[in-house]
Length: 172
Image (tube, rainbow, N blue to C red; front, top):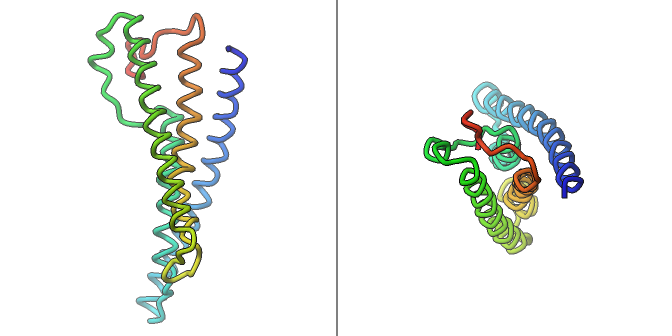
């Protein structure tokens, strides 16, 4: 199980590095599109009809992929005060239960997000005329990435000799 845990952790780390690079590129693209939109709308008086739509879809993708990166870095909001009062065994049980609950919730989000994307696949976006499956795929993609990270964390928790989560330092 330890080999699987290390392999999944390496895969999650590689995905995180790739996601971080993607977020930088998407952020730059979104910034350029918005700056051009403002310039052309207020200076040239010829706005791009597609720029707001593209910026919106890029922001959706940034939010979903960024959630994975935030989860990987332990930056999601959490309240650990009560859990840190538990003895180490109870802390571990609570962390395992939380991981399993989040994995189940994200699996539901991924499944329903994929169903929504497939349902809207034939629909075209109003301005860019791209299939709406592309914006909607951000939901299952982000959920799947977070599931990979949570599975990695769950395997770390289940490996023998792993320190109790939190350790009194605020990270569960």
